Image (cartoon, rainbow, N blue to C red):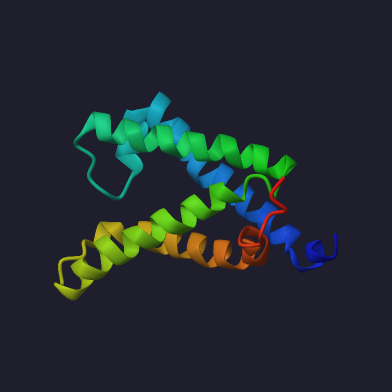
Length: 137
């Protein structure tokens, strides 16, 4: 129980709530009212199946984040997935586009939101807990 004193419970729950609000509700919108979401998004969306995959992933993350509110440490992998895929997108997509002066202005809000998730998750995720050796039971 002494290792729990270093866990930022408020940050973890805050990131789950942020995931529910942003990913969960955006995903539901993409699935159930795609035309409304497409009209409000700052970026072009032409491929309906890819758009649906994104929506499905976001709904799944939102639903898992709801479970994370109940059992924060059991659902840390949800925050890790967000941290990793958003970091990969920035490193693998955004930075090369920025270096080549091809980064589209419409992607800036997505970049800002992803950076807030990355910073929040780096603060919230108890890495000492994640990388602790298990008892091997």
